[in-house]
Amino acid sequence: TFQPPIFIYDNFPGGVGLSRPLYEIREQVLSATGQLICSCSCEDGCPSCVGPTAGAKEVALAILKFLRHV
Image (cartoon, rainbow, N blue to C red):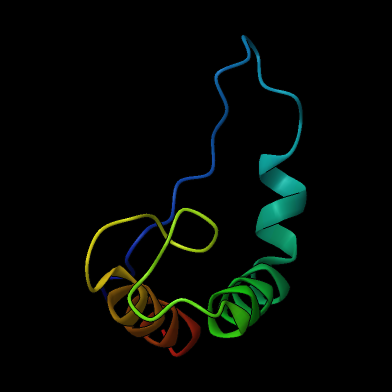
């Protein structure tokens, strides 16, 4: 079955070793991300939570919901 990928990377040559540990705690990362977005007082998204694009907050929460159930 098709599983959508999430790529975790950094720009440091050779990496700094965060990809594997972040993958191992991916459920906690997704949960914390959702909590951060939901606790933000903005209506549609802002640089503090998901970026300044209109409607980005709703879209980001929908993506997180999907990823947590895949």
